[in-house]
Image (cartoon, rainbow, N blue to C red):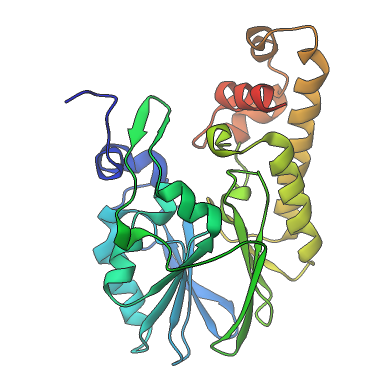
Length: 292
């Protein structure tokens, strides 16, 4: 087989430790309460939320196919309410790979209209190619700007974040519980992956983080796409690092090539802590440079 031709399943089978932040075979790292009427499941570095009132469960992001059986056990174990809805925060496979599985057990799939568009396309990046998602993995309902719903005693607000991590990002805000799910616009204490090929940019990430900060206060529980549950301070620190990265790359870009900028290590004081995730300093600086 051509090593550059991968289906989503083949990539995930070989890349789980990187994409999941840990072994998919592990049980959930932690179960806990993040809101008065909601159950939070932290799964190998990602947050999944499931309100547990009898109106039906709502999931935010479905993780990857090899985790489905364990994930379903955790969801079923919360109570006997049916699984009603899966919300995709953007199109990437590590958030949408179980769409068909959720759909197969009766859940609708809600996402931004560009998530559906991106899932119907072939994609090639990082030396790999991704085939279009099958019909049963596509969102069953989409929106353009915002979507509000009442469910399980909660008001859920979903909103579009333009051209940030991708061009399909949304946030999910649980108003009564004061919980804000940021998707992959927020990588907690880590250099973020920015998918420039599907519309992502450093300025979009900064603007997205600013938008999220305006919706949070000191009591808001903030769910990042990658990392533990945090508060507004962590999101503010992340925003500050993004701004510093943008400014330190933008200034020399007019006279220096990308290799010179990367070699100068403009983020050296952050690299040891912030470069331990999916992105170390070199690829992060490269995408910052290329999207300015």
